[in-house]
Image 1 (cartoon, protein in one colour):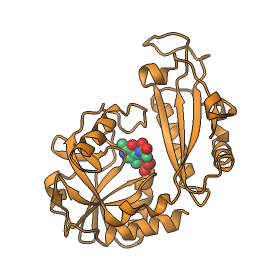
Image 2: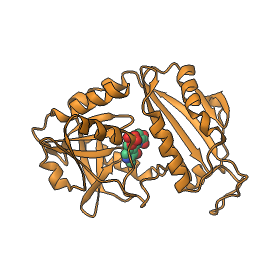
Image 3: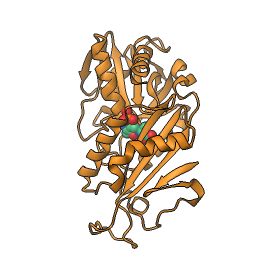
Image 4: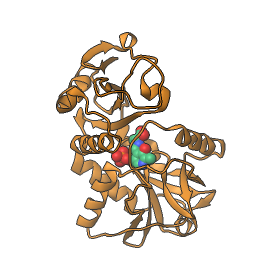
Length: 280
Ligand code: PDD
């Protein structure tokens, strides 16, 4: 694989960052994942805008190459011959050459790393036809989930808990209400109404979420942005998740209880089709 590190395109085995990099020592870094379908970047501009917001919220400098990010994404897709896959981007506050809780001075430049992941057939994953199973777990993440930081230990634990329970993912619950999935936004469907948690610091403002809600409204569906409980979710007609890597993915089981008929319904596949058609 050809990867990008601080201005250079390199074979992955030659790519290096400091052991003092703050993303490594302090999880002081932010990231974005952009999907590629048929060689084309999906929602690139949305991811770039959110990256800028994450950097601002953390008082992190923009990498020098910020304005070249589209070009860098395209070059990596080209160099690695990605038809379907993902581009991962990470910015950290860089390395001051030692461990220190305080942020380094302004002359320490951020670290910028990008790499691709080849995922042939990303948009026709069998899970989209079958639906996925989720369990519910307590949301034990920090309070600024709107910032896309690399603090992914709790989401990783959640995926492992799901796996141990024979499920595919976990929906996280705080004060009785679902926040989101470990790496996706969560939705339920009742009749012609799509319900998903309102935006706040409690969840990531999904780029796929914004697009899907726009398409749902254009398709005359009703969108309610509000909190919901697992109890309400288990009684919904349908449920689904969205993210850059799963697009729209139906959820057919929650904590061992079938959602609706227990089969993939009609709304989630329809939204998936619209999303894939419109964004390609
Ligand atoms: N995850 N919520 C969380 C906690 C996420 O980590 C993600 C994305 C989303 C969906 O956001 P978007 O639609 O912009 O991808 C919601 C990425 C895909 C990841 O960590 O791999």
